[in-house]
Amino acid sequence: MSSDKKVRELQKRRKEVQQGGGEQAIQKQVAMGKMTARERIIKLLDEGSFNEYDMFVEHEARDFGMDLKILHGDGVITGTGTMGGRPVCIFAQDFTVAGGSLGSMHARKITKIMDHSLKMRMPLIGINDSGGARIQEGVNSLAGYGEIFFRNTLASGVIPQISVILGPCAGGAVYSPALTDFVFVVDSISKMFITGPEVIKTVLGEDISMEELGGARVHSEITGNAHFFSESEDECFDQIKALLSYLPWSNTDVPARKKVIQPLEKYNISEIVPGDKRQPYDVRNVIRSVTDGSDFFEIQENWAANIVIGFGTMNGHTVGFVANQPLVLAGVLDVDSSDKAGRFIRYCDAFNIPIITLVDLPGYLPGVDQEHAGVIRHGAKVLYAYSEATVPKITVIIRKAYGGGYIAMNSRHLRADFVFAWPDAEVAVMGPEGAANIIFRKEIASAEDPELMRAQKVQEYKEKFANPYVAAAKGFIDSVIEPGETRKSLLHALEVSGDKSVGMPAKKHGIPPF
Ligand code: HXC
Image 1 (cartoon, helix red, strand yellow):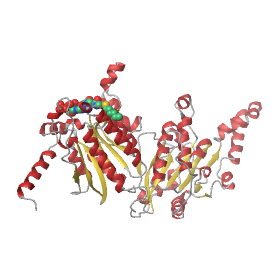
Image 2 (image 1 turned 45 degrees about the vertical axis):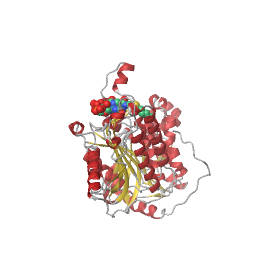
Image 3 (image 1 turned 30 degrees about the vertical axis):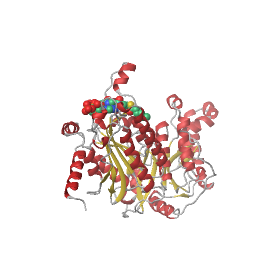
């Protein structure tokens, strides 16, 4: 048994480390509206579940006066705990200790907990709040980042990796979050950029604030680097808990089953989609009309909003939804929405989460801007991701499924397992107006009344092609269903896809159009 003296020494040592960078630095952190690293961990994990490791690690730097400095925990807290009763690994950089800067031992603490999370198959949560590479440690800090990036890549698709940006995340440091699955940011607190305002001023002579350059809104609305935006750290932690409730703990695990609740009556599927095809509607309400308890947990809500992605539950099981959003740009596919959908489809596939796709789009967005921004390369990501995915894949065509959009949005040709269409669905190379103008151009031009002729030809085209029955006659659509039959059809399709097993040709890996 340890002597009282030794126990007291341990307690004293612990207390010292727990003080982080000291009272003054903590006050500065609090004044910025931030929690301390330790508070964050305690708030996020189940009460009393945190076990800390490596709290007595010391840095090894000797240059620039570092030999005289004591950096508690070397600026990062690492350990394990539980969330919702399930085990997780966590690290939180402590900005009160040398600005949370990353030296070699700081990096080694992070890579050690990363190795543990991969070995034990549990999620890794990283809280980033750091001035970046510890300048005094030179290449040792760069090496540390490299070791982290390598492990992020190894763990990708095996365990969920979550990055929480709760302070600066500057320079190459941003690439660890970028390699992880989900990035959370908080208004006014999160800052992510490769080169900061000072460098921009020096090199380009431009003045820009950190917030404008890489604040939370920038990454939630413009760059798409962040997946979840919140107003406060508390709200952010609630979002993380909610996200984890949908995820399996690894690629060989299944998500915890939730209680089955019927969709809420206020989401009446027959009233959500207007009869007039030019009228937009919010596709998220269609999702809510079919999911258990009308639950829909949206991802990247404020970026590339012309496509909607997120998780819901069907019969208690997690399902990924990908849906064109007619409210924004008529739901077209473009550079950003293709990136957004393509990555999410791959996420669901890696973690064995079935995908339900809701289709209503006029095709890919036309224009020089999109062509020059690489819509060919980016658009191909959706085709690649759907084709490659071997999880159950179910499609519902709500209204328009035109051109490349029809093919890309999980068509039978990319190996959808079930394709349903509503009676109003139109599967065609393009919309009736555009089609009639092209194929009946001569007849329209030479008619006595060109407008009447145009209207007749549009009608003729609509009757022939703009319906679901031509595709259904070929077996490209399995079933034309009434809107009110959608939940029942989806639940059944999921039920009979439970043991889906398909192979891919033997290869090391494919070469997606990154
Ligand atoms: C060592 C650092 C540090 C760093 C901050 N500190 N960043 N120490 N290396 N990178 C220290 C400060 O010296 C200070 O120590 C304490 O942390 C708090 O920093 P402040 O500057 O007082 O805080 P604040 O005013 O809030 O400003 C935060 C900041 C600023 C904007 C992050 O500190 C800053 O610009 N830091 C440098 C950022 C940077 O350029 N990092 C390198 C990026 S390159 P004292 O002792 O005074 O309290 C990079 C390459 C990675 O990361 C490549 C990977 C592939």
